[in-house]
Length: 115
Length: 116
View 1 (cartoon, rainbow over the protein chains, first blue to last red):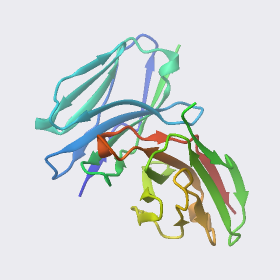
View 2: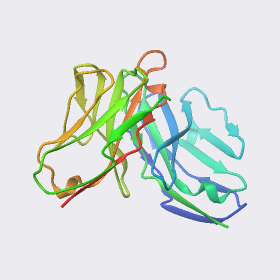
View 3: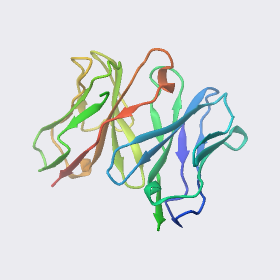
View 4: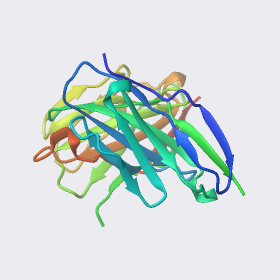
């Protein structure tokens, strides 16, 4: 069975601190896909990044970076120099390959960035 | 503008009163899906559709129905709502061709449903 675990329910930091959101996944598939979504207080879901299981390159996009490690089944997300606008719920999700693959979401991590 | 729309955005109803939440996308996507979001559980898939007239159950289909008569629309039907269906509902769509399930899913704005 596929599963995504985000063990950190809530994280609170002060602005400009770095913060890492953990994501651990379980799957028996050799080909699978990982995603991160952001849900700001307004409620919509915003796509951040995707990774396939054959691409372990880390990704950096501005203040955001992602560390994908198959050896530990983790796909962690780091925000550098956090800002108040980063306050949101962040979801990690897993999908199997194939056209019918659904997204399996983690429980979500609520990040609060205080000024 | 490419988007997924849902209506209504907020709904308060009573147990047993049939309701429909509409979902429409303008991106010509084949795949559409419904999720519910509950605290501590993340989002869970209710139903999905690969194309017109092709639908299948997700992880939590009990108490829900869907239909896909047109490519752009994928309504969620609660024939007899119960309080345990109080939740935040999201509709999503993505292409099937090309990258398949590696394609990004586009989500609607959500529908907050309360069943009293």
